[in-house]
Every structure is written in structure tokens, then in C-alpha cells.
Length: 441
Ligand code: GDP
Ligand code: MG
Image 1 (cartoon, helix red, strand yellow):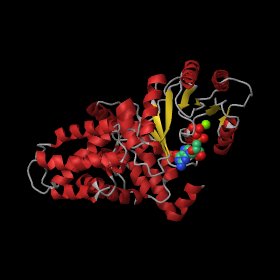
Image 2 (tube, protein in one colour; image 1 turned 180 degrees about the vertical axis):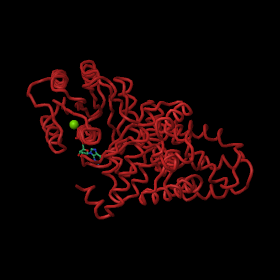
Image 3 (cartoon, protein in one colour; image 1 turned 135 degrees about the vertical axis):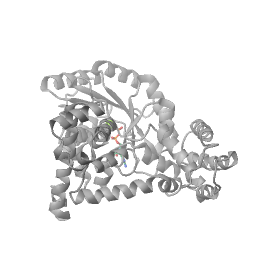
Image 4 (cartoon, protein in one colour; image 1 turned 90 degrees about the vertical axis):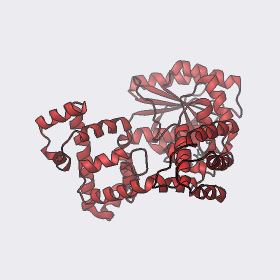
């Protein structure tokens, strides 16, 4: 990205309010950056207009420069436009077996993503997962999924030659009901381009399976085409979420923004490679940085808002490792959820902690729970926060009344806090070598 952009931002050096002129110049550069990142033109226009409105006249705080202020406004607006901070999750709350329908063009990465989801749902979320290929277009397609399933240790529906996609769907759902599977992932056939026959087939399959999620897989490298594909699929069959594959390539991720703006469907995952493990949740804050050009606006934003968070995170990480982590630290961490320095980021700072994060699952990213936890902690006395062990029945009743929660919820929170502290102590005892061994075993 142009170093001009950061030039413009650091050039804004007056104190007071942001003027129209300041903002206009910065916005020209933001517009360029977004177009370079492959964001669709109407989406760029809309975005820039909104941000301009928001920025002009904005007061600049003493502690940051006007450049940092504009950069932060741009960045925040971009995160919002991408779906808000934090990862979008799968909706799996329906009665089992819950069907997930994978749709998309041929070669977009459906089968690969089906295997990745199978691995993720079975290992991270401990679900009983059944994979089924409905792709009767290409002779080897069903075999491809079967082999992938074997590789990730997930069951796949036995192949019966001669069945139609609709028949396979019925069989998959029936098998799942009879054998007690939680989730059925249905991998459909694609076409080289969108055609009515494909859409009709998908509609019929959807009718039979009644999926809780219809996930569209699009190739991030195809940029604007991916957006057109998403619009078509969304209109024809309805899409509940998007998976962007091949984000490990040099795609800037602009398509993610266009897609969200034009279809409203949240991006739920990104494919980061061909391996079954290479599926990540979609974090708008990361893609925002990628769209604007890392080390540029992102750098300014970091200075403006994350320096403090980072210092705080490091302080808490040290306390965690020393086994001195208390409820105040826990509260401080959850205030930062969604920003750099969340609990899972702290875990990420430990060597080889990826597996550990997997074991914790998404628990530490559940914002709603953390909001409640924060309310609970703020109803505690200082002594209680320092030494949670003193919180017995009568104190719990008082805290519950004060925070508008229940004793049960307080118990749950204390248990989660305990689990985390115990784990930290254990990690600390083991030392780095032992930690690595446990995590790789
Ligand atoms: P399908 O026709 O939609 O089922 O597509 P496939 O799942 O068979 O994938 C087509 C090709 O894309 C395969 O060679 C995959 O290995 C590759 N692929 C899928 N997802 C990714 C990804 O996230 N990154 C990379 N680099 N390659 C991917
Ligand atoms: Mg396939």
C-alpha cells in the first residue's frame, strides 16, 4: 500500500477538531487502499461517505494525533462493516442431527472445507459428525471426501453407486438420526458457473435436509467474481454464512467486505491452506488490517488504542504464569475481549499454545458470558476479587443480587476462573519443555 497514506495521516498534526479538509484528503487515500484491496466500488463509496460524516468535526484527544484519530475511525468503521469485532459462529442450536449444507462453484474448496469442518467440530467441539458427499457429477468426488474423512478421523456416509444427490441426502439424514449423530455436513456438487440446474438441485437438497446452516464456499483469490457468486447463491438458495477459501494466498480480503455489504451474510470461516487444520474463524479486526494495509493505518491504530491493552496483557500474562492471577486480572482481560490482548491472545503468547486454545474451545471468546462475568465481578468487594476462595454462600447471594445474576451463574464463573488458574499453575510447574510435550501429545 502507498506510503502516501501514512504520510497523509501523520501530516494531520493540529490539535482540536478534525476539519473537512483533513478528512477529505485522508479519505481519498482510504478509497485507493480499498480499491487496491479489491473492494467493490459501490461498497467503497458507501463506506467512505459514512466515515467522512463520522470523522468531520470529531474532537481529537490530547493523547493521540489527528492522524491516529482518523485512522482509528476508519478502522472501527471497517470492523463494523465486516460484521463487528469477534468471530461469527455456527448456529448449531437446532435439534440433532443438525445439517450443514456446503454450496459453491466447482473448485471453490467445498470438499476441503467439509473435511476441515468435520475435524473442527469433532475434535474441538466434541460433536459426533457424519460427512456425506452428494457430488455425483464427478466420479471421484465421493471417494475424495471419504479419504479426507478417514484422514481426519470422522465418519463418512458409505458410498452407494447410482444414487441421486436427493437420495443420498435422505440416506444421510436417516443414518444420522438412527445412529445418533449430532451434525451432518453435506458436501454438494459445484458447477463451473452458476446455472439453474445447480440451484434447483441445491433447493431440493435443502428441502430434504432442512439445514441450520447453508455455507457458501468462495475462493478469495477470485475477488469480484466471488462477490457475484455470493449474490447469486444468496438470491437463489439463501446463504447463512460464507467461508472464504484460499485466504493463505495474497488476496487482500476486500471481497470479504463487499460480500458482507452486498449479501448481508456473515463470513464465518477462512481457509488458510490445503491441510485439514487450516480453517480459521473469521475475525473482522484482522481482515480490516489486511484491507487497509498492515503497518500502515493498522500501525497508527495500534498506537492509538492497543498500546495500553498490550501493556496490560503482558502484565497479566506474567501474573498468570506466576500463578498470581486474580479476579481483577480476569475482569481486566474480559474488558479487552474483541481487542488485542484477549484471554486467548494471552494464551497465544505462550509457545505452542494453539492446542491449548483448542481445548478451551470458544469459551473464552463468548462475549455475552463475559459481560455477565464482568457484572458479577464488579459486584464483589476488593477482598473477594483478590481471594475468591472467601466467596461462600452468603456472599454469593449478595453478589447475585447486586449483579442481577444467580448464584448458579456465579458458581459457573468461579469454576471457569478456577480452571484457568489451575491450568496456568500447571503450565508454570511444567516449565516450557513440559508444556511443549503436553501440547504436542
Ligand atoms: P470443490 O470442488 O469445491 O469441492 O473444491 P475442493 O475442496 O476439491 O478444492 C479444490 C482445490 O483447492 C484443492 O486442490 C484444495 O486443496 C484447494 N484448496 C481448498 N481450500 C484451500 C485453501 O484454503 N487454501 C489453499 N491454498 N488451497 C485450498
Ligand atoms: Mg468437491
